[in-house]
Amino acid sequence: MRSPTPPPAAAPSAATPRRRTGLARGWHRFRSNRLAFAGTLVLVVLLVVALLAPWIAPYPDDIADAVHFDVLLQPPSWQHWMGTDEAGRDVLTRVMYGARLSFMMVAIVLSIAVAIGVPVGLVAGYFGGRIEQLLMRITDVFSAVPALVLALAITVVLGPSLENAMIALGFVWWRGFARIAHGRTLSIKQENFITVARTLGASHLHIMFREILPNMTSSLLVSLSLNAGYAILVGTSLSFLGAGASPPAAEWGLMVATSRHYLPDAWWASMFPGLAIFVTVMSFNLLGDGLRDFLGED
Image (cartoon, rainbow, N blue to C red):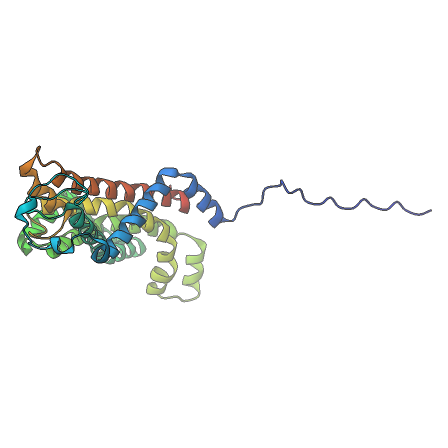
């Protein structure tokens, strides 16, 4: 007697959802966060404007100390979309060039902060003991003083300029990255793969910078995006207080400071630079929230 023929295997239903990989799940979470996605798009637009400012700015000569007596403090119009300032310079042009200075400030400040803070936290967490106590107590001393006050003091000592303000902020900002690196190192060095690396005879430098550091990258990226906006806010505050950029630099904080004397009549001269600061800082914060979702950070 012939055995019954087994029924053919059912074809997989087209409606069956495919399992997402880790990267795909992260991208789905990031894209689902509409505010984070919008903040990222705004930052991309601002970055493009900053890079192309010399070619797309309507009045490129207005970034210097030009004076146009015939258009002093003109309100927004078709010729000057954001109006003109107290010297007749186009506010839109100066806001575009101010974006270049702000992104440059973020790059320099955070580069200095990461270069100092991450090795400090990494060494403290890895070796422990007296080294940890010494390095983290130094970090606590720097953390006891507000960032703006400490940066202002350093800038006054070095001399008021945009370059010195960036250096001062970099030497202030490292403390946060030191704490993040310290905490992550304490957690990661307990993992089995670190024990295996020690057993195989890996050096301390290899374990710290080839094993531990790559595994804290996601935490550092989230912190970088969240700190970028705050760095711009403090940097523009230094310029507003006279310890940062000097006239006629097209820097947002300096533009607000020099135009505040003409409020409320010439509101546009200070409102648009202030709005640029607000939008940029908010966009960086939204990007940080999106990166936290994307990388699965708590």
